[in-house]
Image 1 (cartoon, rainbow, N blue to C red):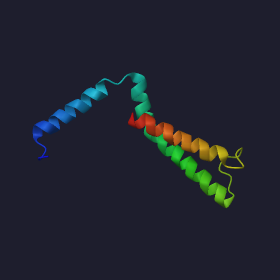
Image 2: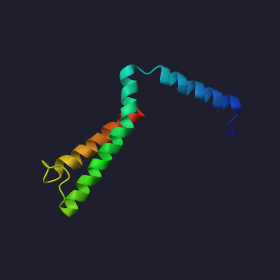
Image 3: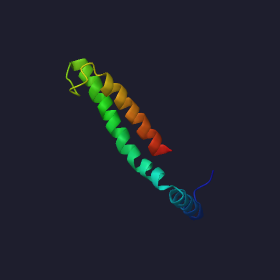
Amino acid sequence: MGRSTELDRRLRAEARAQARANLSGAARLRKRLGWPLCIAGAALFVAGAIGAVTGIEVLPFDRHHVISQWGGGALAMVGMIWATR
């Protein structure tokens, strides 16, 4: 492929703007909440994994670190799906 021209850049920017305009309110909210949810889920998963190795309780009701690891992984996946859909 050749070099990107100014027209190509403008067309891509216009297509991105059109795609953003076509999102519904719920889809826009999901896209906005996706990345923070993904980061929080990944942090919870890592904290649960470290807690399982060191014996530190991350969540007071989760002594075996099952909820923190599985729940954190699930939150991270859902957040990633919402953010990239």
